[in-house]
Amino acid sequence: MFNKKLSDGVYNVGVLNPNMRVFDVIMETKNGTSYNSYLVRGSEKTALIECVHRDYYGYLKENINSICGCDSMDGVKIDYLIMNHNEPDHSGGISRLLEDYPEIQVIATQPGANFLKNIVNRADMNVRVVKDGDMLELGGKTLEFISAPFLHWPDSMFTYLREDRVLFSCDFLGAHFCEPGMLDSDVLYADAYEEAVRVYYDAIFSPFKKHVRYGLEKIAPLDILTCAPSHGPMLTKGIELDKVIALYTQWSAEQVRDTKSIPIFYCSAYGNTGALAESIAEGIKSVVPSADVPLFNIIEHDIGELGGLMNGSDAFLVGSPTINRDAVPPVYILLAHLDAVNIAGRPVGLFGSFGWSGEAVANIKGRLDSVRAKVFDEMLKINFIPTGADLERAKEFGAEFARSL
Ligand code: FEO
Image: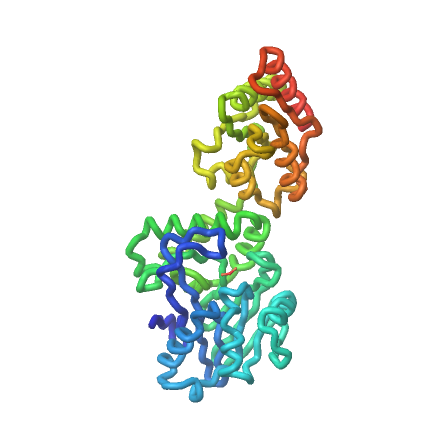
C-alpha cells in the first residue's frame, strides 16, 4: 500500500509498480513506474483525480479506503472522477470504479469524453465535459481545468487546485520511476530519476514540442507549490519542480542551427554500401561545405541516439545492402524510431549495394512513404563492388541530393 498526504484533504492514493520493465510495448522502464491517483476532499464534495491501470484497481481501492478510514467502499463517497487524460494506464480501472461508484460523475475534455465512450463501454456513465478555465467547487477546494491538448493526446488537460496550489499534470512533467517514497525530496537514486525524466520526455513529449511550449506557457502564471503528475515522484517548488520545468523548456525550445544536419545511416555487409556512403558525403559537402554530414554504421551505435539524430536532422540518407530481397533488419529498427508525427516532408536519400536483385532501397522507400517523408527521386543502386566510376556517380548523387534541399 502507498499513500502520501500532500496537504489537508489532498492525498496521493496511487499504486506503485516497481517491476514494470516495458511500458506501452515501446518504452523501457528500468525503474518501474507508478500510477498516481489523487483524492481531494472538500467540505462538500470529494474528487478522485485520475484512475489507474485496470489490473491495479484493487490497490487503488485499498489506498482510498485507508485514507478514508473505511473497510469498504460503501462508506466512502466520491462524487467526481477527473480524467486529465484517458490512456488505459489511467482509464483502465474506470469500469471497476463505476461498479463501486455508479453515481460518480466523470469529468473530461470533449476529446476525452469521446475516448472514454469506447474505453469504458458503459452507456450509463455520467460524463461532464469541461473547457479551459472551467471550475469545480468542492467546498474550500476549487479545481480549475486548464486545456493542454497533445500533452500527449488530444484529450489532455491539467487540473489546478487553487487553495493548495497543486497542479495535477497527468503525464506532463512525470517519469516512469518508482521508489517507496514518491515525493521528490525522498528520491534516493537521483541520477536514475534524472535519466528517467529524460527518457520519458523523449519517448512521450519530444514529438509534441510546440505543445510542450504551450503547456509551459499555460502553467507559468500559476503559483505552484506541488506538481502532482500521474507517473513518478511528486515535484515540489524549490526541489525538482523548477528543475524539471527548466529541462522541458530547454528540450522543447525551437532549434536554431547555423549549419544543416544531414546524417547518413547505413549498414554494410562487405564494405560496399559503406564506400558509397563516404562518396555521397563528399558529394554533399561539395555543394554545402558547411553542412554537418556524419556517417553512422548503424550496428555500431545506440539505436535510440541514432533515432534522435535522424528525427532532429534537416535531411538524412539511409543505405542498405540487399539480403534475401530486402533491406537488413538494423535499418528497419532505425526506421521504427522515425517520429511519424513530425517527419512528413523531410528529405531522405536512399542507396545501397546489392548482389542479385537490389530490392532494399525500394522496400525502405515503402516505409518512408508511409510516414510521408520526401524521398529523393533517384535511388542509388550499385551492383556488388563499386568501381571508381560508381563512386563518382555516388558523389554526384550526393551533390544532386544536396542541391535539392
Ligand atoms: Fe500515462 Fe499517456 O498515459
